[in-house]
Image 1: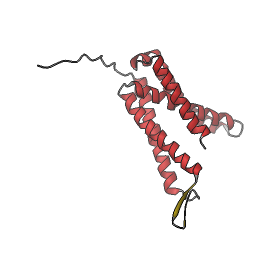
Image 2: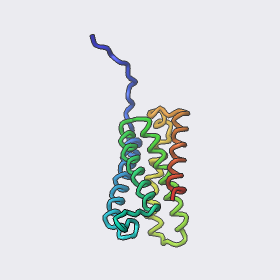
Image 3: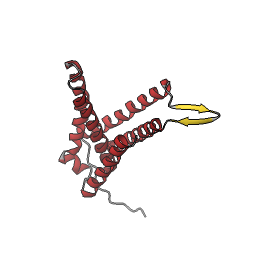
Length: 170
């Protein structure tokens, strides 16, 4: 005798949700490549061996921890977003919000110092991040990912955790 479990029908993701999921995955890939390049080409004094003991700079250690957490969150969040999972929405919103804040801060801080071409390139890099964030905040996306009050609380908690990790843990 077979038992059938009632499952809620999975809503098909629109191109906007797929765009956001793929962008979060791309962020993870770029971050991973950047971290690998930084690790391979690092000639700084972040690591040293003295009398057989490995010494690691704490700021460099925190940078690596922050990078690894960001890479894992981006890969997991992007994959879950594309699968239509609520946890993917939480991770995706959190990462996109954090990266938008960082990018906007960099653009504002360097606005007077850069020429128009650099301003346009910066805007072209920020625009997809902002669009993906907006796409995930649309009512249709919130409905598909079943976003409720608890989901929003979890999202804000993850954003606060990431802000603490990026800005206060040095």
